[in-house]
Picture 1 (spheres, helix red, strand yellow):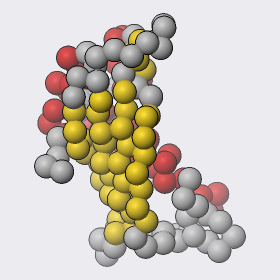
Picture 2: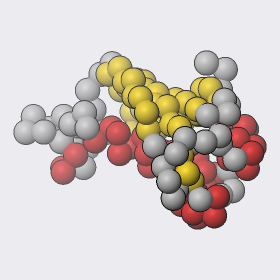
Picture 3: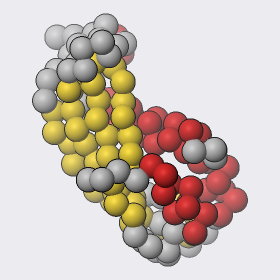
Picture 4: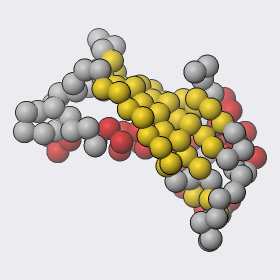
Length: 129
């Protein structure tokens, strides 16, 4: 879309981070849960703690993109999401990325373990990274 691009018509790199977060949100929906409602119910937040992104090919204005998402690693205190963005129709790889999230208490922001409900919900999305 036009607001996602720079003057050369190439998707600005910062926009990809929004694509990743949208894919994470959709992953929760696909697994049967509304992420916002779940976090509210469990009284937790899931802040991003690191990001790794490698761009392979430019995405241009008008390209139809698909965003793949999976769970690369899960532990009691960290979850790593993995992403790949490809051009629909050609399967051209645009970028590969991952980010890690932690779990904190919504009231105190103190680190804590992920509730079992979150780990169980995401288990079917585990990839063999």
